[in-house]
Length: 200
Image (cartoon, rainbow, N blue to C red; front, side, top):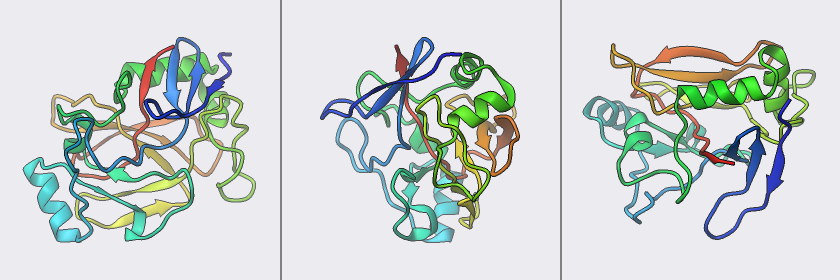
């Protein structure tokens, strides 16, 4: 099992953790500017969020349009995730599906990997993880393509940068129970958390 080796945050890179042959950011991304300095629009209104998603315009928002627990970061739509100006810090990128599968395999797969990825606190009582990896996943919920917020404090949703042939993308999810890391196709207009990855 590739247990995490933590690295502190600096001005150039986020706090990170090495798991197997990968280095992952140790918290959900919370940037509001692209790597080149351009602002990413904050879109609080539900209708405007839906319109941005349909048009492929980048957007971000805090869950529930309010202050959130430390480590939750912000939710981005797929246009922000894949924008060529770059969402992740220099040296990091948004993971693809292969990166997520590599991470899961390095942690033993199945329920073992899921427990290792989940933070030891910040989840409902009795369903927190071991956080043996140092990844520290938190249940920051998601925003639908219509702009509603769901499952904060219950489920963690993470983007991959791959787009499927039918136009959807794959979300990688951790639940408030002992299920393994779960994958499902979702609409690109949704809002989900981002973790960044780099070679170890």
